[in-house]
Length: 327
Image (cartoon, rainbow, N blue to C red; front, top):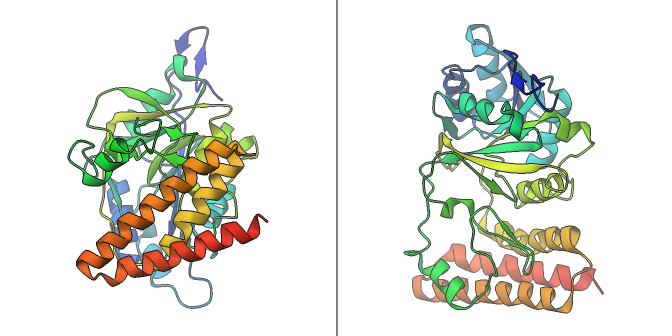
């Protein structure tokens, strides 16, 4: 299956089928708009699997899917499964039947040729060792030169690597893919967001799944999964596969929990991918965490922002958990 019809240097007319997996929680409007959007693709998916985090009561999202199912040009499966986005995606992977499994978030909207562009990459015989391709979110670009935060990162030498989509194996930090300016063609990356990525079935057939350490609200589960997959496969970003991320405010977690996971989850990934960590790696990891705490504390004082204070409390709890769990 890896070559998708490639044989003796030629490409056959075979087109792989696509299963889309979308975890969701309390976002019926977003799911409805996503299903309508997917119906406009120049290459339609074979199925869309909606995994709803609501398990113990009526789901408005389920009613939306039921009302729309007969009018959609693809099959729709609706599954109830809680525990967080990592567990929900694993459930969707196990239910998927396509040659490709795409992770598309419920608040992402794809350009009409998104899957067509991705398939062009994956069906190229020279890319038979590519395990996944991630799209380009046109509304998320962050300019490295104009961002005060990223200028300080570079000025202080907090990272050894500033290439978007790469993982800094010296300090355990993934360099934000949004720093990548618009581009054409493809480029290699170490990790892919789960907002708009397409994976070969072969990656999952090897037994790889999202680690269930990442429960509830997901932080860095996509980078951890990608880094694991990258041991056997190349990963690419396609600059021609465009989409936008709407950043829905519904179903978001509070800043304290995000701050907590910004320590604990980052440390888990770093140790799991690179461990046992050297003294220098530990030093660089905690130096970065100290800077982040200082940066957010400065913002809290300057703006008297309750969200920043909650973030700091979460980070302090995260540091305590990492320190006490590694004695």
